[in-house]
Image 1 (cartoon, helix red, strand yellow):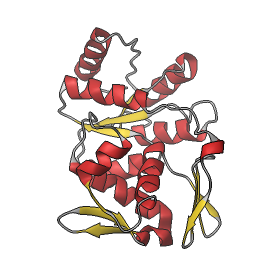
Image 2: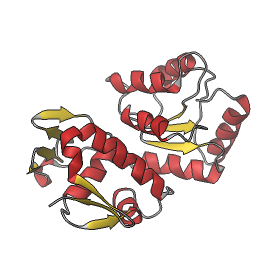
Image 3: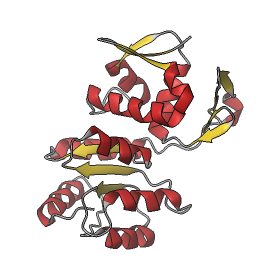
Image 4: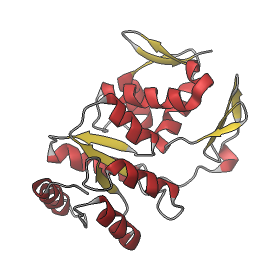
Length: 221
């Protein structure tokens, strides 16, 4: 969903060329109408929409039981870290900054769709606790001091990966390979953005994720 007609047509053309069925909208209000009626597998959402902006569209979708599971990839010209973090905190799965490569956009869309996995088998996942943090992979739940924390699927995968290897230092590239797959077209910077958002949501438990300058991140032992 994008407010610039030429960008919308570029997105439509490239995705339809790859076999996707695409619906476009020129405003946030129209985007919500289409999403509710068409129930798409993914939403590519511009943050700078006229009227109701992309942040509000994302907020509404993620608060609705019928639409909260639809992955959202933000499309924006804004490179401000605060804007990216705000979108991720609202539940967006990923982001693409304009100007963008159509090939990268298509790859990001495919990657987001691949990550739509069913809930883990609870027979193979048990709750584990670290300090004041409790992680339940089977239920896809995280609690800090007994209070639930709402994480996106990517944030949950990142937390689970680091917490399963306490004390180990991982580079950003290693983190990407582990939670996304080696073919996921992201930059090291996107890992930093996810870490910032995750720490903020975890509040007091956020300090368990340590930055190892010049290397990457580790979960405290």
